Image (cartoon, rainbow, N blue to C red; front, side, top):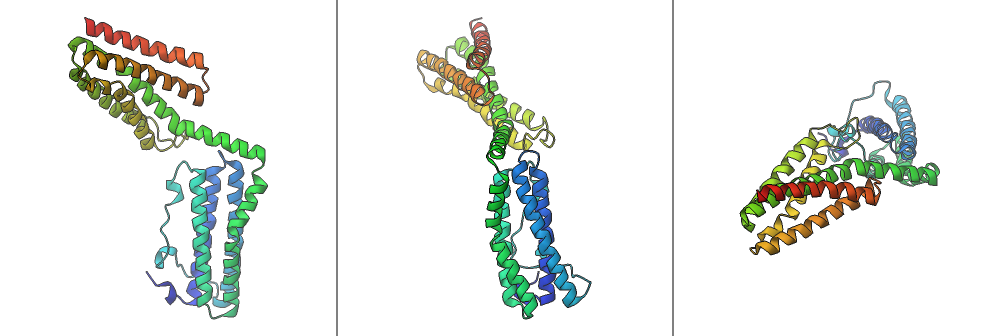
Length: 318
């Protein structure tokens, strides 16, 4: 790698051309990654791409005038001082906030590059162009805000809020709810069967912990391996698996922890109260995020929980 201060004017221009070409393609990737879910914001990045294309054209034009047709291949990784960027194609699906933060960081880095490059340039025309581009990059963030105001009309903002909510439900709520339901309901039978069969709090606690952890691991892997999210838009598979597994374990541990109390009758009734609270939380989540009517959600969740609970009692009493 070469120190930035040691670059010649020809190398500085060649590097600037490379940087503008890279930024142009990054903004094109942003546009492509956002246009399905956030069409209005995607158009903002498409406009920024066009600006980078114009910067690229002006740099090439000046380079040809000064140094001829052959443009040196100098990239950001060849010069010290640049921040490593995570490739856009590795980030799927693209999140709007993540993209805006990365775009802001790109603008700051590019502006500082042009300011430093202009201070090193001796040729008046090169320095003038680099100063102009530094000024334009300085105003780029303001220009992005103007583009946002132009493109994100109230109806467009409403559409993007709906898209954001849809992605949140797909990537967070659905795997979390599936895990919570499985953990809260499926572990009822083994926990209460063990409790009533042994009449011992510690034995019931051990069975509950084993069932909760086992179910969490199983549900986590099942969710992670169900699909990679590339076509469904459900997010990174291992993130979904982690959420689902954690919520499954939490759902089972909730009514298992009361059995740490030595008083069996107190622990049993406390666990029953916790179960009712868990079913209430599941009902609320289904109503709030899945648009399920309260009565319907309560009936479905309550019926499933009751059947499993009765199964545990019958087995434990047998």
